[in-house]
Image 1 (cartoon, helix red, strand yellow):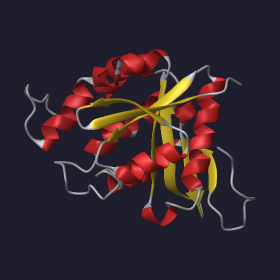
Image 2 (cartoon, rainbow, N blue to C red; image 1 turned 180 degrees about the vertical axis):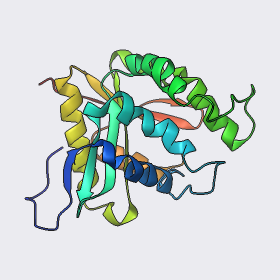
Image 3 (cartoon, helix red, strand yellow; image 1 turned 120 degrees about the vertical axis):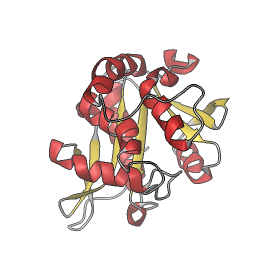
Image 4 (cartoon, rainbow, N blue to C red; image 1 turned 30 degrees about the horizontal axis):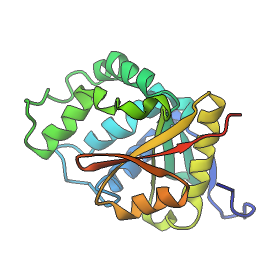
Length: 211
């Protein structure tokens, strides 16, 4: 992956995440949370998706969170961890207690969309899979529609991959809904290879050059 072109005066810039970006990150997450589409109104709370897929990352791993800033406003982000196994432990020990009382524990088996999402929150071990030995890092990347398809996603991915490689990660993986062909094409274009299919999810991975 290579950076594309010099920065112009109005070109969005990538910078580290700041705590004051939290509301914008949550907004971007829910507005892209339905396989890339707008998930507002889909769950009991619009905070549910970002409480699972954004909040724990900027809280537990802020050093690996980067935003795409346009005119002093985040319009995209990449977040993740260099060590998924350690992240899962921290999620259970620190993030679940932080949200205590916000959401009910779902029944087993989960039935509704809310219950399935809450099961991911209360059972973060779903992130553990056999490929972690070779691809210990993982990430989530989201951009508002107006900023997609213009090279910014590639730049965010490169920024994140460099950071986790410096932290010692030998590889990075993503889990994508099998029907999200746009996301699958994006990762394949960046050199990610399919590793495993698990139900509705497809795991893709990319080896990282050590820094």
